[in-house]
Image 1 (cartoon, rainbow, N blue to C red):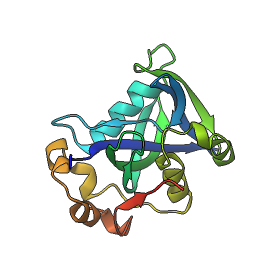
Image 2: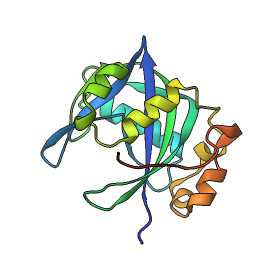
Image 3: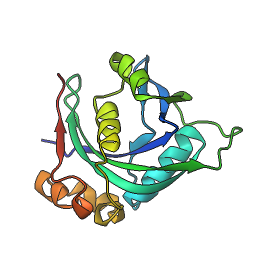
Image 4: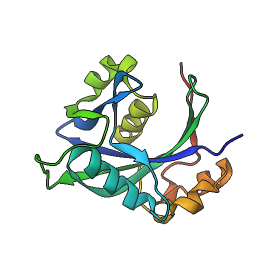
Length: 177
């Protein structure tokens, strides 16, 4: 079995609306949090800040760690290990080109996200928002400082143990309904 794709995601809320990207994946438009793969030599915090800037033209300031999520894409069989962070955005650069595949950004509330359920890139989008709204977060501790090589070697139990200050008791496995 292959190692999961290690990704980060940024959850940012402003007046009840969440920053999401509309992106083209396999000729289909989908909605996702600003998110992406962790690059070699990069910490999780560096990756989430970089991905948010590239995909939205906003500067992301991580404030808390929401959790670690493991999801298997039923279409491809690939597994994704997502580290989700909550934070604020500032310093928007409207002249910046967005990352390849990103069509535009939106600020959507939870109801609007739920209405777009079939258009969400994965069930992780709503799960991260739900956990954020439920207060499932803590200071970005030990997990946030890990680099790509360290995260790539994690097994399920090790990832669960990284949850800082009790943010998530274990890796959350997200299954499709």
